[in-house]
Image 1: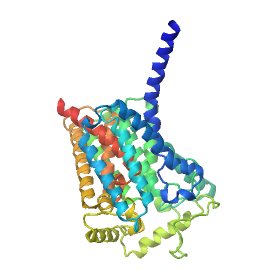
Image 2: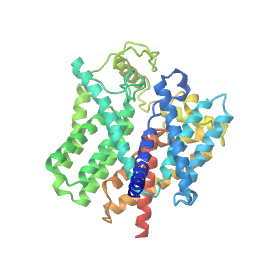
Image 3: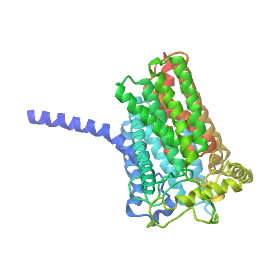
Image 4: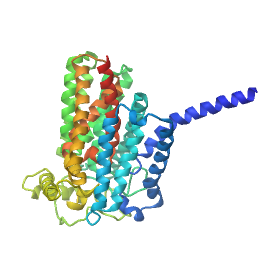
Length: 456
C-alpha cells in the first residue's frame, strides 16, 4: 500500500517535471532550422537534415498533446492576434501553390515553421511566467552563439596579428554547432549583439547586485556595444542609438544616481572604441572583379580566408553605387512594388523576394506584400500596430507614471521596439528567423502586461 502511494507520488512528480521541461526543450528545437534552406535538403549532411525535420515532429507532437488538455484553446484572450498570424501563414502558403513556376514548393516549409512555433507559444499565451522562461532561454542561446563567432574573429585577429575590417565579414566553414557550413553573416551577428546589449543594459539598470557583478555586466555591455557598432550595420546602429536615447530618458526620469558613472560608460565607450577601431582597421585595395561568388562553397578553405575578398566586394559595391549606401534597397523596393501591381491581390509565397530580385527585399511590409498580397501586408501592418501600441503604453507607464515592471518585462518591450524598427529596413519578424521567434514571445508578454494594467 505504502509502496503504491510512493510510486504514484513519484509518477506525479515526474509528469510535472516533464511538463515543465518539455516546453523549453521544444522551444530550443525551434531555433535549429535557422540558417538552413529546405531547397538544399538533399545536399545537406544527415545532421542538418535532422535539424530541418526534427523540430516539426517534436513540436507538432507536443502541440497535439497539449491541444487535447487545453479545451478552451479557441477562447484564448489573444485569439484576435492568433487569427492575424494564421491568416498570414495560410495566405502565403496558398500562393506558393499558385506560383510553382516562380517559387519553390519547398518554401512551404517556412510557413509551416512559423505556424508551429507560433502555436507552441500560443499555448502559453496567458502564462507569463512560462513566456518569460522562453525569452530567457532564447537570450542564453544567442549569447553563446554570438560569443562563439566573435571569439573566432578575435582569435583570427591575434593569429594574423592585424586589425580586421569587420564590414561584410563572414566565414564559410564554421557554424552554430560545428555541423554546417552556413555561419551567420555580420548582419546576423550585429543583430544578436544588439539584443544582448539591450538586455544586459536593462538588467544592470534594474538589478541591485554587488559591485563586482555590476562591473562584469558593464564590461559585457561595452563588449557587445563595441562589436555591434564595429560591424557597421546601418540599420542596427540606428536602432542602437534610438534605444540609447530612450535609456537616457529613463535614466533622467528614474534618477538612477548610483549608476551615473556606469551609465555614462556604457553609452559612450562603445562608440569611442568602435570609432577608433574602424579608423585603424585594415583597408583593402580592390583588385578583383565583382563576379566573385558570394556563395563560396569550398569547405576546405579555412575560416576567414575569404574575409578580405568579401570586404573588398562590399566596399566596391558601395563605391560604384554613386554614393547610395542603401545596399540597393530602394531599387529592390521599386521592383517588388512593380511586380505587386501586376498581381495586386495575390502574392507569390514565402521567400518569393529571393526568386524575383535574388535577395531579401529588406522590408517586412513589402515582404508580406510579395508573399501574401495586399491582405497579407495589411495583416502584418495590424500586428505591427498592436505591438507598437502595447509596447509604447507600457513604456509610458514605466517612465512617466512610475509603474513597476520587472527586468524581463522591460526587455520584452525594448526588443519589440527593436524588431519593429528593423522591420522597416529588414524582413525581420515577417520571415522565420531569430527576430520572429523573439517577436512572438515578446508580443504575448507585452499583451499580458498591457491587459494587467488595464484591469488595475
